[in-house]
Amino acid sequence: MTGSLKDGQVLTADLCDSSGLLLLEAGLPVTDALLRRLEELGIREVYLNDSRGAASPGRSEFTAPYDDAAKERLEHNYHRITAAMTGFVDEMRVGDPTSTEEIEEVVTGYLQETIKDAGVVLASCMELNGQEISSYDEALQRRSVRMAMLATVAANKLQFSQADCLIAGVVGAIHDISLYGGQCTPLDDDFLEHPLRSIDLLRNTFGVTDQMRIVVGQVHEQCDGSGYPRELKSVRLHAVSRLLNVVDAYLTLIEPMDEGGVDAERPVSHETSYRGIGAGVEPSDALAYLVQHALFGYFDLACVQGLVAAASIYPVGTKVQLDDGSRATVLRSTGASYLQPVVKLESLGQALIDLRFSERKILQPDESDSRYRRLPKSSLSQVLWRPAA
Image (cartoon, rainbow, N blue to C red; front, side, top):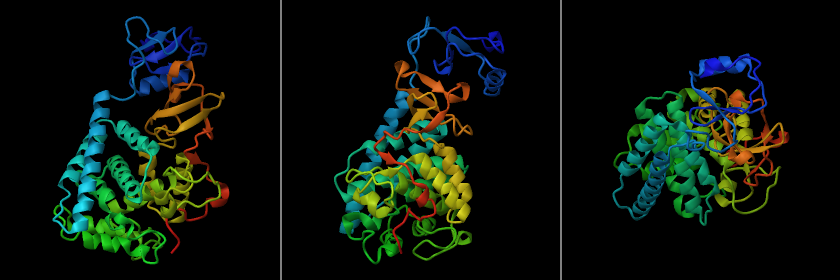
């Protein structure tokens, strides 16, 4: 019990919560700040584990950070939405009647999982980073699915209505429908018109409302009027489109690429993310970049803050270096404690540490993670999330 802990007490074994999560390492003193934090979080039961990463008497082993059943449901949802997107695009190409019914069902499933545990949805979304892609359409489809997932989490975090959360997920999945088949790419002169073509393609699609079509046309608009296709300003933009614009920019920045090398000075745009050129921007750098550009007026600041709250400064799956030189992978965000997520150490038997209760701190992203590159300061003022007009 927490009542047996005293300020200044030096631990003879690791202090863990009831699920086996490491709160404070052996040899470190209990602090008044730790006791207050445990009380704030409502943690009443703790125990000492004298074998790092191993089971303690009466307990099985360090528990996984996500429920296996939830993971299976999300994997099933991913296969469902991927198949639904494939069928949707194929029907659209040959002019058959189309419907978003199955896509809506999967997005509803993502929303339900998000309400239960946003962390597991984010983990599933970020795991898609490692998947190899072999074609333009495959890359576009994966990116659209990720956008649907991340937008649903962020919309829920911003306390959007369930109807708007559903719009965010569905439009995130289908907004780039006119780009499939490579008929229009960022290299084309009329690329900035593709949202209007998407609206036309979706005009007779069952399940796509007038409100959804409005959002489809506004995903690439910026709050300062510098976006496309109509250069609308924030007062004329739907709240969901402002959020999707932020999510789209974030994914454009971080999307890992399969071809080419890491070039710290190479701008990232739709062209590079869809074509597989160069490495994506480190997620923590991308979030900091979006915050800065929200202050410049390009993005809705509340939506950027909602994305940060959803993804955390160090998103799930990010590899980090701690201030003692050890390396770890982020497993969970911890709400408002953006810089203190739950991490899994590469050493110490893959021990889980909640950094809110540890003397350790994240020093920086792990630069050995070849999926990402750091964003140089010289690029902070550049517009990197869209092709040049």
